[in-house]
Length: 191
Image (cartoon, rainbow, N blue to C red; front, side, top):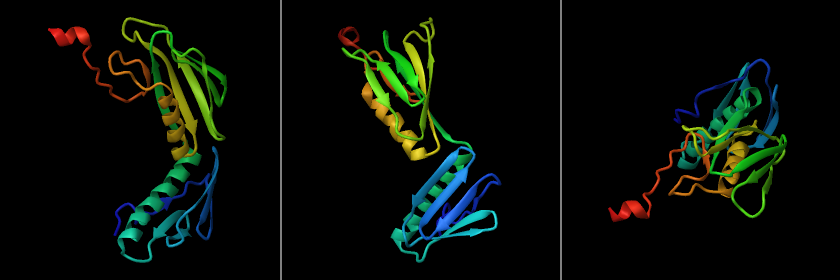
């Protein structure tokens, strides 16, 4: 049996869960999410927890079992705590402006600024930095916030793709916890 799939999912007091066949609606202090799951999965609510069961021990059902349980747990975590991804913008002259809570204007070395608008349910926070000796190229930090884990990760990945990290100086947009290995330039090669 799936180790993850067989764990019951506790429902906090401030969260309401409605199960309608294969469709689950979770509502909490941060918002409301609904998602449909595979018809083969058996999802039931017992007191203050959700239990996910599978109809057989086939490989397909085993893979769906853990996935379904994790997605439901992420929905509950999203409406209570929310999800957050941090991005760092590094480069001389690179700049980020917050136009509205879900709209950014990024200056990334192109001939024009890039305006990025997030889908419904995503909010941005921007922290700008002045160059110092320690973080010479760190221009700004962008926080992508939302209740849907998949959507938060998708928006963060799209922002990162606007200017991928350049391997020689490390300029570009990266995740805050991402480690970038820099290549040596021409001068290091000749020695």
